[in-house]
Image (cartoon, rainbow, N blue to C red; front, side, top):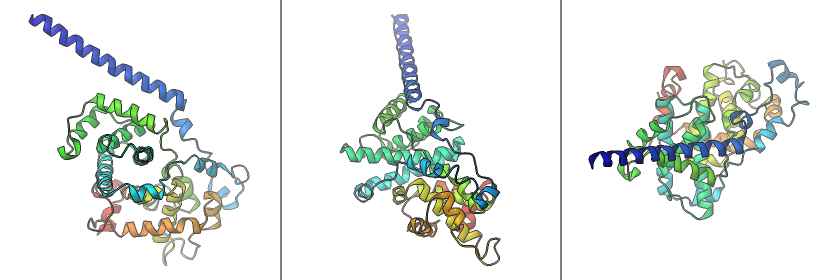
Length: 336
């Protein structure tokens, strides 16, 4: 009888493993059908402009609509109605979830592109749930956030492992978790989320434009100034109100703010230059008047850094990441 029971348990385990494998294969098949070449299809970019071409505009006739075409793929800016009606309970839980996504990316060394894409995908999924009348709490909000990170990371170089996410999820306080999670919970959530968002991953993200726009603004690669553009883009993720801006506006505002703070003041390398040059307007396709509102809100957000009493969202994991020497200790510098 004991041997029969052991055999039955083993058969059940094999059956569950086969079910999980079938789900993984189904997900992979659906992604391939929808996205074909995955990352390369989703993140296509025209050849980078070199410095001479940026100054002369010689390449603009050849690629005049490339940035606009890429921006037109962005369907992930949230309407004001959702932001005003989603409720304080959701905003608080969203803030906690985004902070956990930041921490997960740091602990698992998932790249910044997946971080930004996962938060945008999370916001878009919640908006679609709200729009359909289903509600924002049909599924565990924190688990949805981790699943969005898992989905987004599959289109980057280092994918998050589902067992790592299970471990992180089961460390979440019980009042925000409600049960112990398994890999199958995340597999089922992935299928559900992909169905709700129509198999669309949240590309382009602000990161899609960063290097090109920074170069157009005279911000050198691999410098503190260049990192500050990414710093600002990631800081906006902590505040739900920034989800109403398209990716191209957030990047433009981040470049504009970086120039104003680190390049254009007296004694700085580009003092006397216009804050938004003709080259920047030409490369980005964005006028200064279009980015000013976002830039103003970005300046307000910067003033909340290290001030949880006035910040819209939790910034703990963000500050921890950007206080590291590898990130020029930007958060620690500004906080001090």
